[in-house]
Amino acid sequence: MSEKAPSGQVSGLIVAAPSSGSGKTVLTLGLLRALRNRGVRVSSLKIGPDYIDPAYHAAATGRPTANLDLWGMRPSTVAGLVDFAGRGADLVLAEGVMGLFDGAADGSGSTADAAALTGWPVLLIVDVRGQGASAAAVVRGFRDHRPDVTIAGIIFNRGGGDKHRTILTNAMQGIDIPILGFLPRDPTLAVDSRHLGLRQAGEHNDLDGWIEASSRIVAAHVDIARIEQLARPGRSLPGLSNDTVPPLGARIAVARDEAFAFSYPHLLTGWEEQGARLSFFSPLADEGPVEIADAVYLPGGYPELHVGRIAGNTRFLSGLRAAAGRKAAVYGECGGYMVLGRALTDADGKAHAMAGLLPLDSSFAAPRLHLGYRRLTLATDCALGVHGAEFRGHEFHYASGSADGAAEPLFQASDAQGKSLAAMGCRVGSVSGSFAHLLDRA
Image 1 (tube, one colour):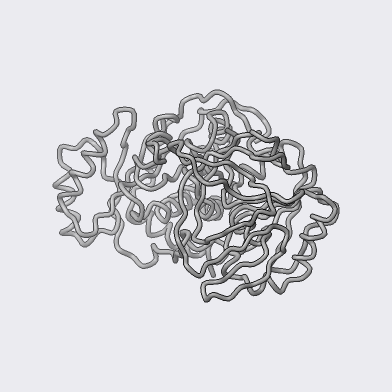
Image 2 (cartoon, helix red, strand yellow):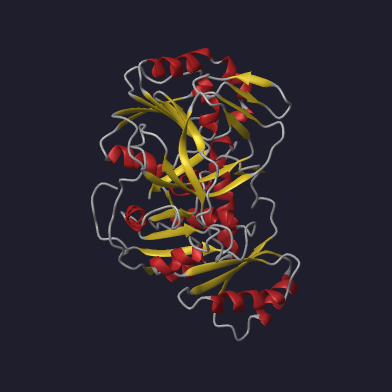
């Protein structure tokens, strides 16, 4: 994202669906690899606050990817990321979030909003299990719902045999949208999930082989050449900013492994472009942050799946304490925040001692979903900025957590509709964190 070429000139296409669970991600991966195999320089974006799918995208294309979040990001940040995706690419394929018209609680930030902003047409994926001619009514409704969104093609997913295909084709007569594929119910086109979404790309035994097999199925049942032709140049977007969340320091040590994988690519790239130097370490391998780091970032992830191992990794925990002792900024988000606390209780009710840098006790013994966009205002000066600095982010976890009065609150928070929430996170000295994942400055 360093050079500044005009944004919006690359051709793009958005993969969307009527609802979550329709098969967007697997189909997107198959299309990305199939286009790459045709010699197309294809890039990708993931719409919405998803920290798992982008790693799959990068594996399918061999190129870096990023999230695009119209609720959580300023227009200049969105423009910069669209521009970034288009550099050196013939085509950008953007995977939508949830259903096409679903967004934040205030109604904004949907995939449809992204289509209207960029001017890219939509390839609609319709899961036709359990329906026949009714699928045409779904298509017609989605076509007509918003005049500023163009549905350019349809793929019917998880279809039955020839009879089912004939019913669907006949029902679509008179609807001026081409059917570009009929994907069968094939067990290859599936990937395991857990409570926060798909299993991480790095946990797949043969990720490249699975993507390649999926792409062959997609190529056999979908008109890849016509899909490539559907892509259209986007609108020119003003701005092109990459100064999102301020760097935590000049030399930032970033935790990165299967337990700490939920870091947004645009955030790390933005830190580098603002002059910070990043190094990476693996808490699961019992590595600590480098001693020259003046900041440590513990992103979210799945520490609860490895909590016993983390509790026994003394070099890692001692490294965090040493960083705090030399007044380095130590900042944790969600899973990283829990590890900075005193104890993390697993799903079986066993408590494990953590770093003890924040007066926080967290638990998975009685899991409850906490989900939603957050408007966040710093309640104290810290590495993120001065008191009153504003950010946008989101919360997505099943843990409960409580910090006692020995710490200052980190953020004053409200939801997407502006409703005030309880203060989030806490700070003690140079150590801070919360359950929120930051997306951008407000």
